[in-house]
Length: 175
Image 1 (cartoon, rainbow, N blue to C red):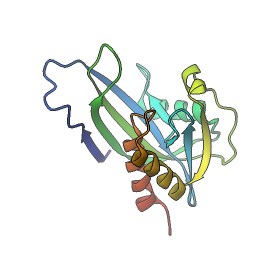
Image 2: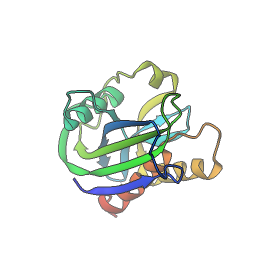
Image 3: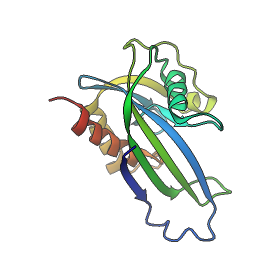
Image 4: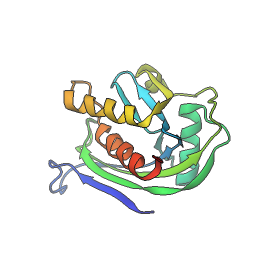
């Protein structure tokens, strides 16, 4: 799978002696014309791609399908192709760790446009997460505005989400 971006936070410098949490994630890119299936999270006021951590013993593609179903209620999921990897090392707000090393595998998918019931985890419900079909250019402008405003509740991964939205708009949306 191609490397889309490797982002290393300026504070990461040397990780020697630091506690690093490693996580493999899988995320879905689902487009329909200029619209894209995203998750809106009220707590952070941002849009993100459906997906999340891959469980131990689970292959990455299966993890992406599971996460897409759970978070959006997507039905008739078809994996069209691999899209790429976004790798990042950044500070994390977990007491026992200094940094997170996240490798997100993105897949282009097709689904039935009508969504079913989601099966969100408690923290996702508490954060006000919901699946939405959104115009991709509106989602880009929205996330840019959140980054520019730098609110106290800004999401840890909004920079990844904005980068990926802009890349998908350039590469996958037909003008």
